[in-house]
Amino acid sequence: MSERNTVVYQRVVDYKGLINVPGVFRVIEDWLRQNGYSKKELRNEEEIFESGKQIILELLPYRLLNPEAKLEIHLVINFRKLQEAEVEDGVRKKKLWKGEVTITTDAYVVTDLENKWDNNAVMLFMKTIFDKFIYKVYSSHYDKMVGEDVDRLLLEVRSYLNLQRF
Image (cartoon, rainbow, N blue to C red):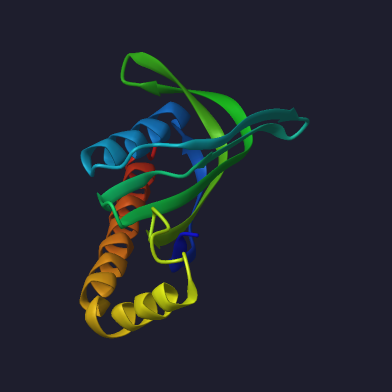
């Protein structure tokens, strides 16, 4: 079975105000595409309440590094209390949403994708020795890569949200 190492746990971005919802999705998708991640959508829900619309999008983008390792970023994007708002931008009117957004991220390094090492106890023991003493440089490099990717993604989204002040 594949081994999943948690590198980033529950890193959160909160924002409250005017939101361009399609713009947030576009920023995230563009960033993932530019950084070599393949997008996997786990959940896409939209509900309407008295307090406003709620949209939940759960993504699990991944990037294959080699046949033995891949990076995964688990994103949960939760828009709450969304209500339509029109804002005049010079001469044009823009349709935006007033509400709250919370983006929660977790990041993982998944190794042994082909389950080569779990065949028997001797192979598992060898894998543990290799991971602890020989491949430690590679695994720490992978941890650093996915951690930096999450930081850059959240910085990009936070910058976009703060840029959209009206």
